[in-house]
Image (cartoon, rainbow, N blue to C red; front, side, top):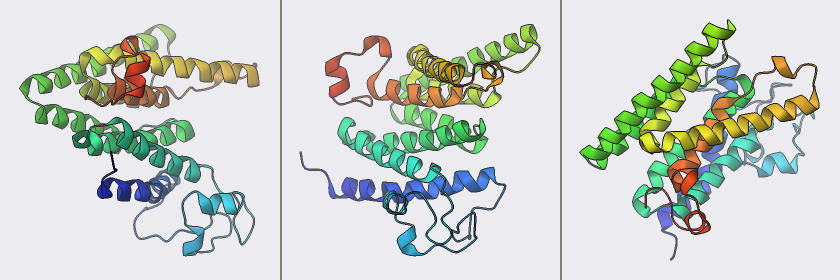
Length: 262
């Protein structure tokens, strides 16, 4: 089937939107205002020209360095730009037409959340709260029963991880789970409903465990003190579960066929 023109335009624009998202992440972490600021090199402060702002390709052509001072440019930019492009292609391939925009909104939000969690171990309320509201609104659009299932997932997701967070702090005497993870898991419940939460948690904890094993091999002496970005794993789990259903029901036909509630 021929790709609709509007979908093709959105896919072409995805890396540029990703550049916008990456800039928002960087400036938020640096405590700077995002709006009305022109893009500049962080090292020399020189204002970047248009040809230096072409997503992905500019970074590759300059080998990841500023054209003026040769300082390294954060990999955040090509990573987020590629993430936005991948989400756009994935959504166009796997989603029915009426689910393309919800998939895009979900996927792009998750890419930005992953960037925040990997770089700074934070999951901003400005993203997790609208994400939860978006899942509830999508459930509302699908009918009362789906809204009820989304609401149950939202409540169960938040309550379950809040309980884990409380118990860990009670028995270990320190924080082991951020409240941002609790809000993210609540939002996940709104999107994948109650039945999808175990799948999201399984994928998220598996990825977090693999990350912890990597830290253990890389720096065994410091591994116990290293933080693990569980939220990033939950984001991947949410995306895969929403697209293809709970991991326990996956098959080759499911993964290669249309997803996103089709």
